Length: 295
Image (cartoon, rainbow, N blue to C red; front, side, top):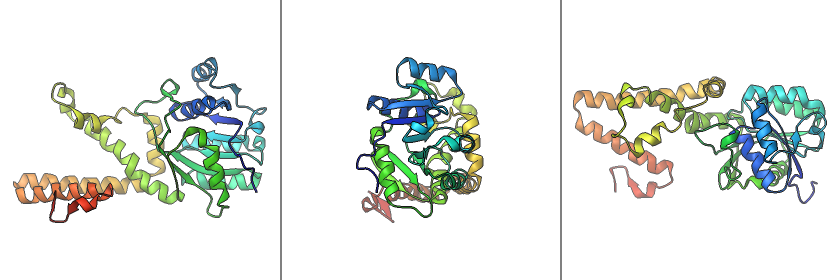
């Protein structure tokens, strides 16, 4: 059995961007000692100057951390675990924050099993359109969902362990899923939104929007200014699921375009009505809608 209180006293964080930096600030605010590693010396210096980070996460401090949070790109997660596996204590919980899981979890599960520590996939469902430590916030995760991906065969207690270890971040809920299901859903809820936003802003009309745009424009373009290096890796790691979702959107857009080209008002009305109903269904408000119309 595990100890009653599994809130860590010392945490190691790999990557001090928006995600890792926000974890660092949340744990530091809770009085927990934080050690970190980042290839960006400016981020490390800033975090140490404001006393969010106590020192570097290295061969000396890794074995002393009860929780390790890996907040870097998917391939970098795998490379870090492989190159530091010998320093991770068997009593340590390792959680990654990658946005794809099929390319990360199987490899890290295997390493953890061989080395004796515990690894669980994680994906905090929170973020901003900005990146970097300078935008990190201690309350970024407060009330937000956290997705956990345990090994195929696992002791249910590791879920409780993860929830308690992550408690300083104040997540609002936890969802448990598989790597395959995670990637399938994330292709729609996150990745597709970035693709659509990136494509939408490329219209030449975007350069003329000032004075003619409001909430709809801002909502649809919020994530267009993205980190191309990161999102390229994430998209390629989930290309099968993302390609399928893009195909669905293209098919629907063609239906709208064809209805407009034909001057088919009835078809256009049906398509718009179907979209309204689909939104209510997706939000769990279908009791407010009827197949024949929306109140």
